[in-house]
Image 1 (cartoon, rainbow, N blue to C red):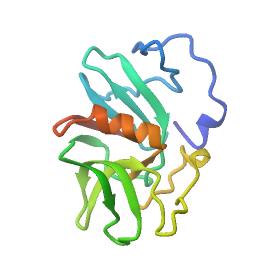
Image 2: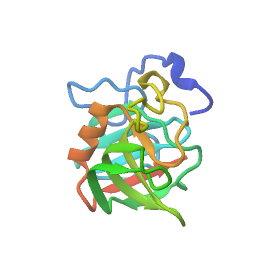
Image 3: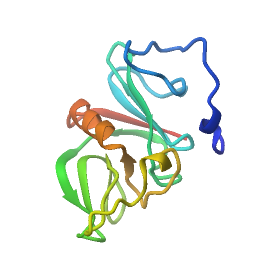
Image 4: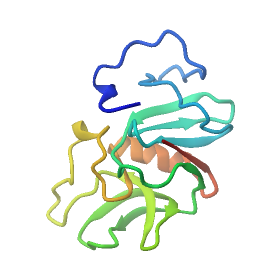
Amino acid sequence: FEGSWHRGIPAYDRYLHAAAPDVELLAPLPEDSGEGRRVVYALDAQMVWLVAEDETILANYFVSGRAGVPNPGTYSVFSKSPVTRAFLDPNTIMRWMVRFAKTAKTNIGFHDIPVHGDGSPYQTVDELGTALSGGCVRQELGAAKRLYRFADVGTTVVVTP
């Protein structure tokens, strides 16, 4: 998972984990990414997987987080908000927030691509897969809604390098 490996993903013949019939896998689930129902976030790949209890992959897509944040490890969803504002800029609106980690100053969560007060997005959907965020993990709107519905408070989040 180095550099921009995702720009020309080869076809994979086999996966260790089966995907739901309607899911196109972009990459295999990372090794040592936990067991059971969980969200997996790969920092280097800037990619998320939603994994069911039986290890079926329900979704797999690119995101934009911050390089190296949070530290790899196992976390738990501790709160959710359908709409929230950025801590450092209250004019920044984020939808479908799922918080799972904390820093000394703020929380880290998954949410849609935020918009400035004038409605312009912080980045484009085409830029997902690149670490562009100040800390949280940005997703396309549909993916953000899906993760919000999938991850109840208490859901495991595994962050891999």
